Image (tube, rainbow, N blue to C red):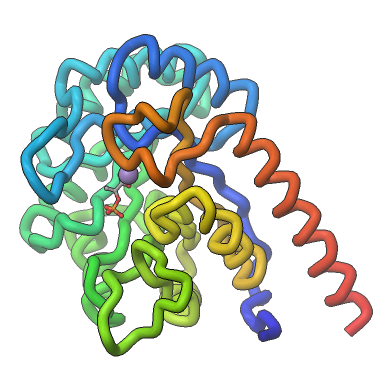
Length: 275
Ligand code: PEP
Ligand code: MN
């Protein structure tokens, strides 16, 4: 399949860090590595939607960890579920941002109440240093996905402060899933939405793959489709992660994966020149 989506140069945004913030030690280790790695945004996610009750995040207690990330010159990011969480994170983190620093907030796949989406956007829109990332809903629908963008705009977000992220759709009988992925990406749809909105489109390779041994295959789609970057879960000790242990990798493994993607991108560029 030859990529046909090269109208815009890809932006190569990297969002990396653990699925969930678990402890100060885990986050401090992650921040050091994120800094060495030069990630664009480090995941320090404080509120975790869970299928069944269990560990669901450090919540407000973890806000100081995002502030410390900001003090280190990193751009921290977390999912927020409701507008008051967006406000608390902004109040706690924005004063610590360094020059040109940004705070990333995102609306996760399971958060599909349009009222909540608009109200979160209204809070995030108060400060231009806040980027709002919108993930697609779990079910396969292009119009619903477009609607999430419309709701964020309705809430007052500026286009330049929005980022989109495809995390695949829940597998169903209508969409083949030969590799047994956790969620099935529809990259053609993602690229249509990128084209229509002009917004950067990332691929959350961790929540698509669902397992470490499938991560590389999914990551190659970011090259094939020329995504604007990716979200990846990276944990100091993945086997003992409190959430999503099966899909997280170490920072060393991230370095190796990025090397493979760079090599694939170089081959792609060479082929484009010869074509
Ligand atoms: C996440 O990114 O932490 C997450 C819960 O993913 P999703 O909302 O895509 O399920
Ligand atoms: Mn996760």
